[in-house]
Image (cartoon, rainbow, N blue to C red; front, side, top):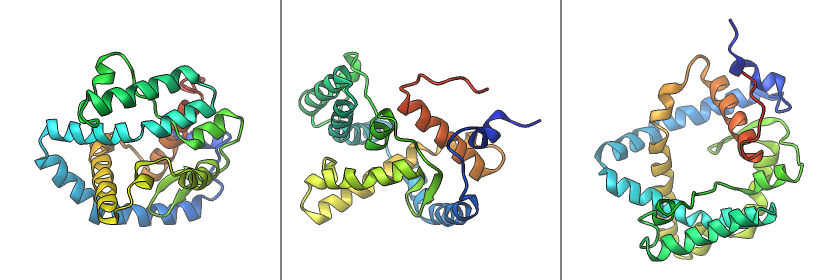
Length: 217
């Protein structure tokens, strides 16, 4: 019996014509993760007190609000952009630079937007699936969107001139994000490459369409 998820990439517009090359890069990334980032993330997850872990995640989530604000504005979703602004102001002040997510407790749910989604909202096709060295799953559209995002300089890393501080923030953000994915790895079944590819493509489609997608199962 064939799982619907296993054929998702073949049945959608997000085909994987570069699979042989993608698999090579995937194995490189996976091996690097297995012997470097994953052990660090496991140690971090094991010894980091949950309240402190939540606080760190909240801080980096708050630092991502300007990106949400810019992209919601570009997509014409002005109500969501207003929520992004309100969240940033509330969590930065009342929430002590974002340590406490008071905005969510007040009913202001966090958005998750990027320039790849903005391009998709304006009709730009995702193009073929591609695995980027070190960066992981992407598509031609989303990978290319990283360039204008970097030039826009609206992420927190672009606002920190002190190199050691910027590197420390990046490293902490990376480890915290990787630790948050540890539990999800237990859900992987069958071919690891196929599972991650299809999960990524479905998740991106869901985000671009703001959840308004057809059930393919």
